[in-house]
Length: 156
Image (cartoon, rainbow, N blue to C red; front, side, top):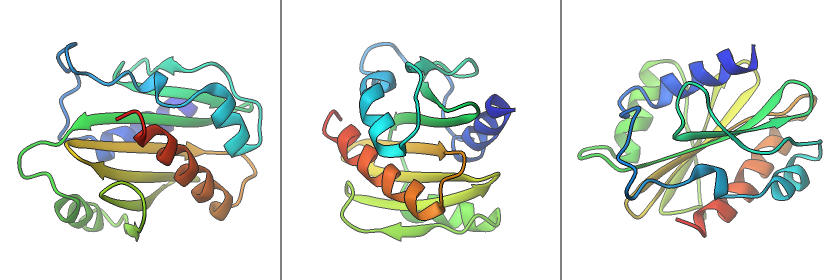
């Protein structure tokens, strides 16, 4: 179930991303943050990071029994701007909420099923962190997303 939810969320936001990227220059998303940093941010036990089975460019940290924190990073594609992505999401009834002070530009989305995503543009990269944390309030999940994204951006 967890894999299905995360895969669905990834498909929604990465529908125009190439699944495979050239090895050269690809960001190792499993090294953007540590297991300890994720555990501290979410306040629950966290498993070691693993590349996503559907797309190895994505990295998942299992949280508790059925939660997840997942990272994805891709280079910006021509014409791919925060405004364009936010507009496309709004057309799909996923309302983005802009956040200040993270990367060059960032916004939250809540695609459903208790998931929260923080989309961030920094330089030539577009990064997304997806969180589904069992029993946590949306405010706590958003705070964890901001904390983790800020740490991840230091490595981009």
